Image (cartoon, one colour):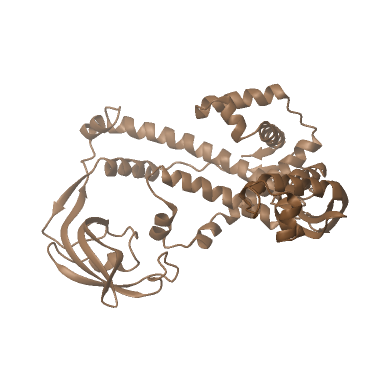
Amino acid sequence: MSLVSTNKIENAKYELEIKVDAEGFEKAIQDTYMKTRRRINVNGFRKGKAPRKMIEQLYGENVFYEDAVNALVNTDVAPAIEETDYELVANPEINVTSINKNEGVTFKVVITVKPEVEISDYKGIEVEKTVNAVTDEDVDQQIQNLRERNGRLVTVDDRAAENGDIAVIDFEGFKDGVPFEGGKDSNYELALGSGTFVPGFEEQVVGKKTGEEFTVNVTFPEKYQMEELAGQPCEFKVKLNEIKTKELPELDDEFVKDATEFDTLDELKKDMKTKLEERAVQMADAEAENKIFEALIDKLQADIPQIMFENKIDEMVRDFEIRISQQGLNMETYLMYTNMDMPAFRKTFEEQAQKQVKVRLALEKIADLENVQVTDEQAEDEIKRMSEQYKMPVARIKSIVGIKAVKSDLRVAEASRIVKDSAKING
């Protein structure tokens, strides 16, 4: 195996020519024959005992070529790519340009790598920090939230349904007079005004009274998850079984004693104001840090391949799927509830993904410029910390993350500290 040439064809893309000589190709063919002969039947020979030449005469000289070439991708092409020392950000595109028993195999491989990065003036970044004042209205809102959490649902039957009520309904959906899958439920508790149902549905429940049966006409969104309903007019037969409203507790010292660790309303308000002020400072610090990294992105010079952004979005989508699965939801159901398709959902991560990729590239370059070094001992300590945090064996952490990735993350963390410690925060 030899790397014949390396040519840059566009931003962060290189074309490699890799050649496996006739001897290497012959070995791959022989190995393939040895692995597959047991599955080949040839008259006059016991199964798996036919000579290679006999098989090639019957099925053609190239009968083992495809499997042999596929094997060479792992045994020869992959190591040749690794020898280039490029850091790939996507799977390589591998094509065979020539194949000959006497001359071997030539591969054309296109790789996408991390782009070249330039950055300067990353120390002493100046940003403004603004801590928002906490008002009495802010405290009152927290009190109201506490009352809401401690409220109880009570049935009302002396008025029509209003926004903010819980409507307990039976419903069945029809398209062109035919019931559709997933469009029926009984005693479903719908929060009116929440916007969780098909647009226009909840508004038509408002004003109805307990026991009423009525028809709701809606048009599903154009990008609705179920394609057969997307953009289609449908009707629902609905019965309003019950109207519930939230009854809030009286705001007095007795309520405070029952619902909190405090004895009086004044004590509760004072504590809430203190905590809101602490939170305001934390939010201001986080916003200032965000401004530092936004300024860092502006100083970055790099022609970043789109695949790096797509990879980051893939990662974010996977993380999101894991989180909702812990709540008993799957992606298909979530998209149906939010009236989105996957392309639209992925787009919600686009801006965040671009920012994270750019910040990471900037910090990796800064780590290089600052000659940040991470020892094996530091990496091992970090893996032990992760093991304790995630309650997983050290060996398992290493198999999932890898020592190289841990070292890279630690270098980035140190570069981040350098940038933040040197920044000038006004306010």
